Image (tube, rainbow, N blue to C red):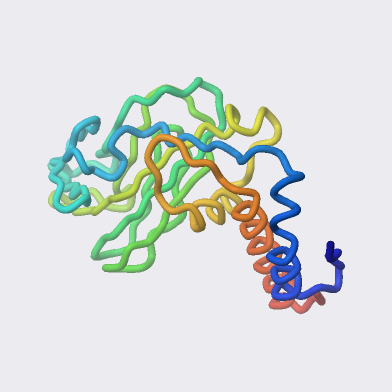
Length: 217
């Protein structure tokens, strides 16, 4: 079996990993099981499972259109999910708007800023679940009646249940995993190879960030 070296580049490490994959898969533990606790997160059943608060909700081709009815920055879309209050959870969703905006949750944690105007952008957050109801504030930056947000592929994973208290991944680590798995319904068995690719992607991004700041690899 080829050994990984600290001096290996990303490409060298990935090549060695692929060469050794068969032996590694036999020795490592069972795949990691992730569960998406959201019902109808791809809106294949229309608005089933979802409720709008001071919003109108319509679905077209797997995309939820959310239009504000009131001049209220706290207008939300919400769903009750089977999570333990106090758990750390990961929430991810694809968003498209015709202007920049800030989406948030009623767990007092906001998603990263939406900036890719008129394009789909993955927004995500790791938060402590303070209730069993996930509220998504579709634009905390606007109180304009008619403000419109499009959502698709919503996912919620109870990180504490999957990884254990104190071992929960960061938002950035979960983003890498979801970028590989894509949206999924119910359960997804993350293979050892997928986990390793996510790890290498994180290492590569960290290395690039250090280099950009004037450090060395």
